[in-house]
Length: 180
Image (cartoon, rainbow, N blue to C red; front, side, top):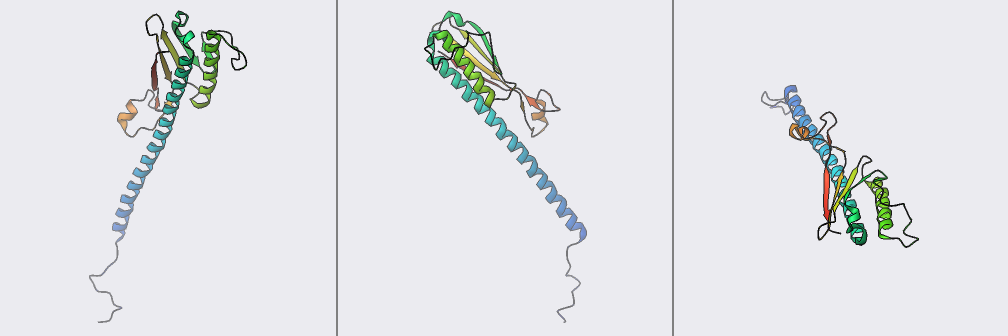
């Protein structure tokens, strides 16, 4: 038998088999691309959430360092920090690095410096609230930070949790309890 002649049983791949293999491989590659997009989105979300936790603990450390102000009855109520704005203003802003400050002016300086740091690492639409109840012993405060984040939903259940389904915005909240 001549080795150059093909036997009737020997054959190559048919065009249908090649097309089925390409479709299976394409579906697999699309799945990998979706998983990579979700992983990248989750990494960015985790980064923002950890920065919010670091900023909240930084503010808590400033509160611990200035117990004279944060434990006083003058603090009762809500202090809102958004962008570089502190509402209500605690005291006129004094540079407490160069001058010795009172506890009230030190708190105003700390809040101002914290807002400058927060605008650099948190999304620009962040909102921070400090609520204190100093009439009890020990006095306690709550630091609440909220921001908008865009996320990629893995499935429709994750998309339903988003507030605006067209752009998938979530509004996470980080809350920290502090006893100054």
